[in-house]
Image (cartoon, rainbow, N blue to C red; front, top):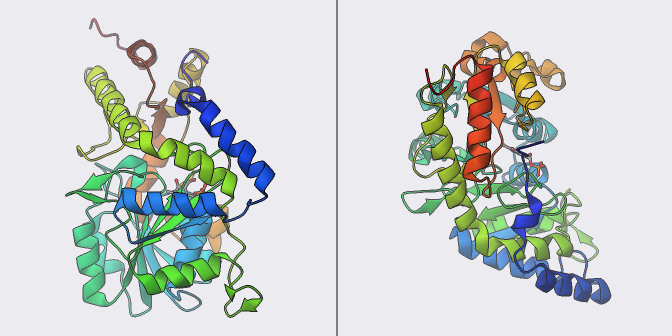
Length: 368
Ligand SMILES: Cc1ncc(COP(=O)(O)O)c(C=O)c1O
């Protein structure tokens, strides 16, 4: 590919320093939730301004553990957005609860907060607010509705680490914030990893117990938990990268701004973003999406689809009886958007290559 989606070599700075720490780890045997995990948890909590961070195995586990910690289970409903990655809704289903979807807006494609309250029933126990594509949902509204109805708030921040609104980090508005460090994310582990943050010490204690097979202390299994402990290796990688995250997010915003300016004259539509976004993905609504995608890829642009089958159409969720037409904005996005390459180290030349290719494919050049 002329313009690739990921660029890992530029993410490591002094890789020898990291290599030295990995060597020490290998010799120490402190592999699982060891000292490197404790250090990363402290640094992540400080970075986000959260009281406690708990390292886990993945963003998916982070969501499942958050719901288990809040005692969400059979007979409960959890409200979330129709435009999200599979894992948000999977987590709800996995703890035995019923997912209830709210359509996204047609502008920023996050939860349409005007429809949130109508989705709440006497069985609703929690809301999962999702910060999609690196944007921060307006959490004041979510928290207000939740407090009014006595609901817990979980934030799915898998795509928005480091995004802030009114000086507060995504993940610190609700009761529990969930993060993914999948290699595609703004802060990428070298494998699967995730974290859960909360400022409530009681929830933090319970999270730590549940990620570790429900053990309060070794051999005392008081609750049904998961084996979802963070690997010390991933903690070393993440701690090495964390100091660069704000700068990478700033560069992602700059890349997004350059794309948006270049696409202004084309028959495409970009999603609304605020100045707080961290440019996790750059989605564009294009004519003849599948043909456009194929032609972009033929021209060496590593464009992809995220996510072409919306939640309401996924066979795994058929049992919940979602009617796709009830979520027209999420459905439209799934069928008409594609995702342009987005990385902090994308050069102006690469951005121009992408936008010139898109201009050629959608039938207009910059000259006309
Ligand atoms: C919105 C959202 N939620 C949850 C997840 C799950 O994270 P993971 O892949 O680390 O399990 C992801 C990422 O893949 C995501 O984008």
